[in-house]
Image (cartoon, rainbow, N blue to C red; front, side):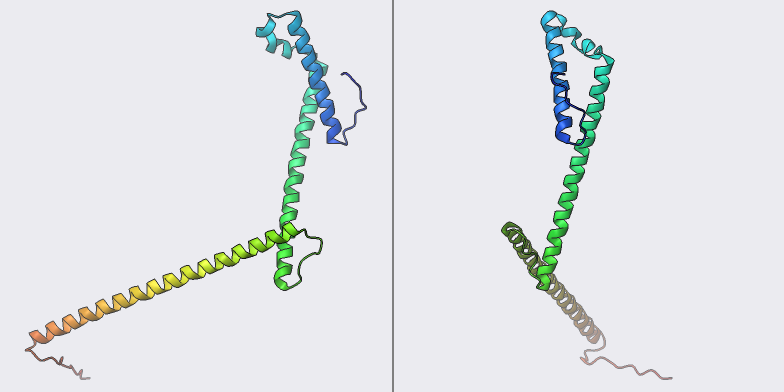
Length: 177
């Protein structure tokens, strides 16, 4: 390596710096090999595999550390987003109860909360309009079914009365016990 730093794994920045130095050193070795043997382009991958085992083991370890650090950073970002969403939800609940939320909230957070509240109200209004429309449509269909049923009933009673001799009054049947 070009500069030897003490092995400090407490900071992701130090680890990345060490990885970059290893990467630079490896690239310098590859460039030197290519310059000394310009026709060795075809053997480049084989040469890469034949690096000293100590150097490749270090590269593998640092690569695994870098992947681990990246995974930790992604986990931290996901947890921070979750915390932000929970705080946002809590502040909205406080606002609904009349608490007004935290005074430390920025104007953009309150604007976002207002926008979210407005969108929720708009969705509620739209949902209520759809429910009212469906209710009216259902009532109209029921009226139409009832009217068609009454018309059929009237047609049946008229046809029965015509068959019974023309009397418009249907006969009442009294059941005896």
